Amino acid sequence: MRLLLHRKFITSKIGIIFLITLFWLTADRMLEFIFPVYLEGLGKSYFEIGLLLSLTALGGLLSDWPLGNLADRASRKKMMVSSVIFSIIFACLIFVFNVDWALALLITLWGVSYQLWTVPRDALLASETDKEKRSREYGLFSEIIATADTFGPLIAGIILVYLGYYGVLGIYSIMLGIAALIVILFIKETNHKSLLKSIPKSFKIFAFVREIKEIKYLGALGLLLLFYSFVFTAMDYVVFIFEPLFCGPDGLGIPLYLAGLLMTFFSIPGIFFSYPLGILADKIGKKKVLFVGMISIGASLIMFSITENIILLFGCAALYSIGSAMFSPAIDGLIVDLSYKHTKGKIVGIWDSFLDLGYFVGPIMGGIIAQFQGLREVYLYLGIFFMAISLLLIFFVKRK
Image (cartoon, rainbow, N blue to C red):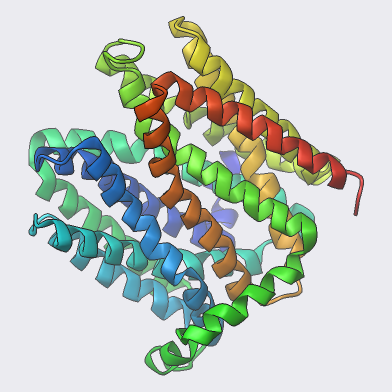
């Protein structure tokens, strides 16, 4: 965290990207926190809530690859500023219309607007990382994400109590506005080509099919890493959605304030460990750290599902966060290593598609397991599966 606060780092290109991400992602987590509460207030069932919220990822899934093309063809700066405008408009309209088809459409469009920022941001970040320090730089990035994951819901909860949904929307809009201002003032123009004229070429139907060939640049290891990214995002979203339910009367039966505190332990350790573990990955090998991280995540979920001791539950949540702090910097660094000589927008578009597929599939699969097997089994099955697929990495550990 010291480096994040260092003046030279803050004013560097990567530091500016991180600062934008902190404002933007915290605002996003605020909105994601109140979406389930708002939809439940409209009388939606848990299945309907999960299905509607999965549409944010579906919007991204349908647009990631063409947006990756657009990030290579046109201005990434203009894409991010446009995202602010569309994100605020669609977010506000979600709280105006309560008809099912309108909610589904607006949530999907909000998901597309979010990716209109994420894809060019990721492309910029991939272009600016240092080959010798890549995992530690992505470790710092993971600390930013963990910070947003921790404080976004806490801020939203406080604002919701005193100012209601529109108060959260107001703060959300202000934070996105600040992020847009930083983009305008400090991000250099990457491409002066017209954004509107580049859209038709980037969104051609056949272009979507052609982009599949870009995966070949990542090789067999790259395909495995994309699969890991898909599984992890699906699992992480399931943990976020079902933790309050698992802690409730049908699960652990612990008080609501403890459930909220327990949720923070799934992210707080990552704030402090992502950077040093990123340094470790650069020094001893990203694949080794990735493997240990996956084993830690899987073990934490298995133990979380079989214990009812409150101290052990907090310990399992912390272990999950530490495992994630190993997993994310290592896998991010590996994917960028494999695509270092290739166009970043296309690779990032493919990469984000796998992430959004995970966010889309996760709540649906978690809901099915919870419905037919139970809430405890959700964590147990995910932990076993994640540990099992980690063994596939052994075949690549000694390969350069």
